[in-house]
Amino acid sequence: MAKLLETCAHDLMETAPNIMQTIRGEMRRGHGTDLSIPQFRALRFIQRYPESSLSDLASHLGLTPPSVSKLVDGLVKQELIDRQESFDDRRRLMLVLTHNGESIINTARSSAQANLVKILSFLSNEELNTVHLAMEILQPLFVPQNKQQPAKEY
Image 1 (cartoon, one colour):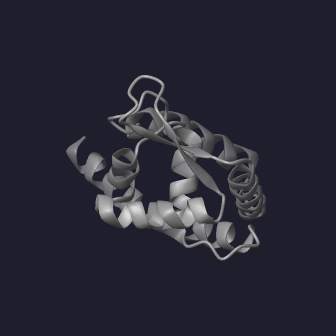
Image 2 (tube, helix red, strand yellow):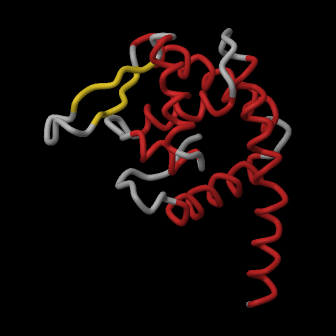
């Protein structure tokens, strides 16, 4: 069992970066803007976790709060996100997507998903079912610790 665990962990570490590189590359091509990968990741995080704070986003991106503040300033200037006061605590600012930000991230995601469909179309139905089952098994294991919602999507 220990050897199989090590093999599975190794396989994940070898495969996941390649999958993410493919997704990120397609998202950059499919959006029609000059957003960086950290900006895309920020938009997607805010989409998945509405009303997140700057520190939530910094933790997710692995950046310092000042760096994330600068990134957020740029997204606010582009009218892709807004800062809003929290309903519970006026000292806390929440980050929310604007309609334009939502549109950009959805367009990019649709393009990336269509590309994945093309790539996966070379698999048999049995292989597709295996991939689907693997994703259903893995998904709950990789839920961010500080979030209630499942980590299903990019």
